[in-house]
Image (tube, rainbow, N blue to C red; front, side, top):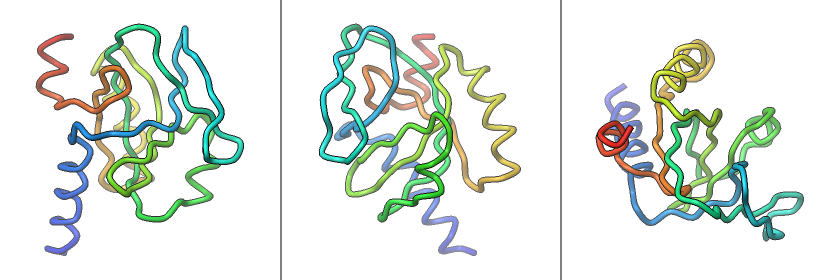
Length: 128
């Protein structure tokens, strides 16, 4: 149990890292290029944007069942494949989805993204 909690804390720490690489994030007004991942697109934002999303997993190996979820956003960051759902302009909207997802996924949390890069939730809430 203790190792599980430490692992979750480690995942939260990694998700707040600034060295992030986005492989997919559907947003308005974007330039889309082919990705090295088959059937996926790399999205480059054309405007500054702060969004809130719910991370459901961060895994060393890709998971086909998570990858198949409708509207899942997949990020490769620091050697992990991260799976996130939702794209909200407010924390409250993301929190509502998080509460629903907690029934199915353990350790889900809200991740703030600025220009597709994770930022600390306190920084995001101060700007929102």
